[in-house]
Amino acid sequence: MNPLKSKFPNTITTPPFSGTARSVIDTSQWFSIATTGAQGPHLAACWTRNILALGYSDQTISIPVWRLQQTERNLTKDPRMQLLFVSSKVVRAAGPGQGLTVSGTGTIHRAGPLFEEARQTLQWIHGVLMLSIHSWNLHLP
Image (cartoon, rainbow, N blue to C red; front, side):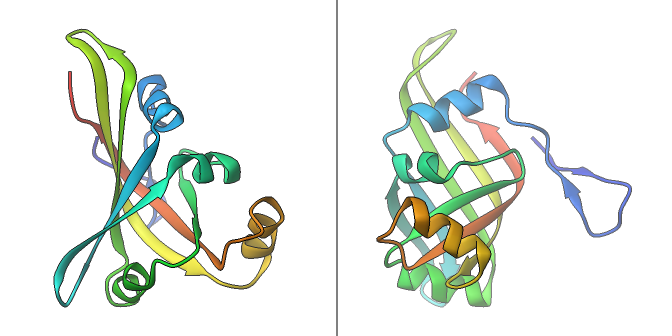
């Protein structure tokens, strides 16, 4: 899906997640984070249960940070990122399995209210990667 421009300049209104998109996130076991740095693309894998613990919305996804050093270095130079979720539990017309890509920009918060609130839920975190969602798309019909 393409992002929709709102009536405010420089802001993006993301279409709400469909029920299928939410099901992919809610039933995936893990997801990957893609960023780009001087060495090219970089992927990091994380457990979806940690996103679910912090919650997500149609506009943002909060990702707990324990390490993710290369991801953080990449985001300081280019904040664009993508998440890839895959679930074998989502059933579609052709059978089981569905993928979801979420695109946007990310910033890591290591202090402040967002971090402190997240740390009350997951004490082990060293930060929160906040993804501002620009678009999303399902992979299979």
